[in-house]
Image (cartoon, rainbow, N blue to C red):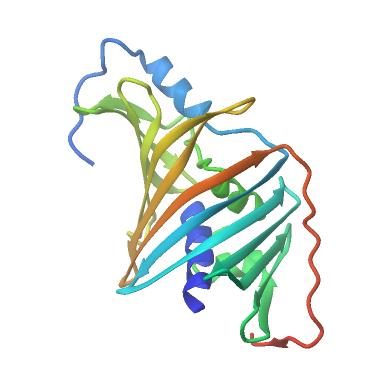
Amino acid sequence: MSRFIFLFTLILQTLLVSGSTGEISTWHSEEEILKALLQRNSSFTWLSGRCRADINADGETMSGSLFFKLRKDSVMLVSVRKFGLEAAKIFADTSAYTILYKLENTYESGQIASLGKQYGLQANLEDLQQLIAGNVLLPDTDRISIATDSLHAVISGIVQDMDATYYLGKDDLMLRKMTLKDKANRLSTLYFDDYRQVEGIGFVAFQRLLEFEGDGAKARIKIDVEEMNYNTPVDVRFTLPSHYEKIN
């Protein structure tokens, strides 16, 4: 079960936080390329759905289904299931998080900000929600460069004091890959695939792959989204069972 918590903190870390390039493509201007990146994120108020997560961390593997419900900038609830049983439940609001270990009748809780500081990063609820939605941190447009390689339009820039590189498919300008490298040389790479058009939202990547390397650790997390429901209100109430033992 600790690996699911590793997944939670690693995703948090990734949010807080390449091949040679050549001349700009003649069929896309720099303005078109930058606009495609800046307008790729989906806007939503409510979001719910389910996905499958396959995790490989330091040679250990784990798979499970994640059911998520959230209201933007307010609250989120994630249920982790294995073999049809609810193994964990993660609740977070704008200031704090609680993780229930359902099979052990234990829980841990704390401030989201303190969780981020554990990794020397800044974090908030909005960042975590944006990743679930398939959105990404966008660069400071005052400090970017644009070029191409054989397959991509490539945008390099700075995000929250990290080096960020975005790879957009030359033909469709969909974001296919993103890398983030912080001052400690920790590298996170996100891949996006299986874009599907969602009515009223636009194109959303239903397949995502996260690879992380740094601090002597390596991890690979593959997420296949099975269902996404936008802007339909859902119940995100959460109750901490009185008989659960706190372990942190």
